[in-house]
Length: 408
Ligand SMILES: [Zn+2]
Image: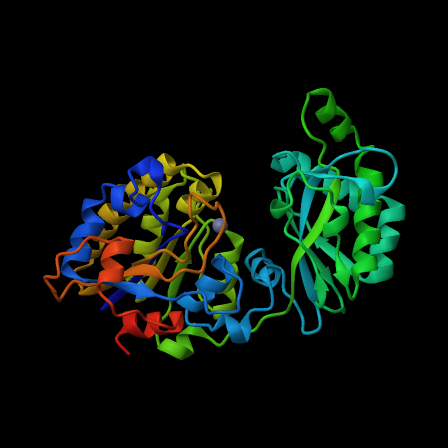
């Protein structure tokens, strides 16, 4: 038997006015997915337990069988693992954005958050700004004093690791405070002064950088400040293979999911052209999954696009992202699985809601679809929120999904 998990990030939604009070899953033409749904089962699962923040970090931990109430320390350590950062016990990692804030006067506290992505800075400029910042003697001395090191990525998303410290500091995701004064949202609690000192020092250096001078002249926002958030201590996960007796590859464009796979002891083969956007390399992802299934028994395909469309509040694009999942992922995936000639099971779900109306994550229980090529249930319902709710058989713990898929 071969086992495939497909996650359409943030697909689930509430009825959208623009779609005639239907949801994107309900409206999308997805004949292949709906054929599997009709022959399989569709029901609800609670992937985000009460009391933990709703997001792909907590929801996908649940889906892979790791209870976020027990293992979740923050977003950053998972992303760090997916970016090749090996954290030691006692280390604290932070997600560190290269953000854009205002430049009014000399008081860092008096500024306003303009962009969590440094005004959509491109990878090469971001790398140069970060590397030049870290090499600036006065700034390097501060990092040295606190035992902080950086892993620089070709984007606005970087990782900072503290040798030792506390994760009991309160930080705010910069995308949650766009256009707001930063004063209210600066770090609070243990270690807050240190983070503030580094952020303010980064602003003093970055606002003078020639790249930012040029960006201002070109009418772009300057990527002029570090912004820390998502911190957490090193995470350890039990081996997926030891838990379930299955092994394989998790194919994704996002460091978060790669990190969960890494910590779970699964492969996470990178795919060229996998962007995490609607123009991702679907064929490459399916090809990589099928290649893994030649010798392993498990593959996961994570597609980020529906979530991005949800954050953008774009209902039509969200429908299109779901239709592309059907035509560009499910059609070739099923062809490949049939060609392998073995019985197979597919679990397909949205990790969490990313509603068009709220444009942020929501922990409402999501619809899941389980299909077994050797069983025809004849239930005949499509894959959507409504048919999942109609089943009236909600799975209360997302950690029960893998045992369901594997028939354990
Ligand atoms: Zn999201």
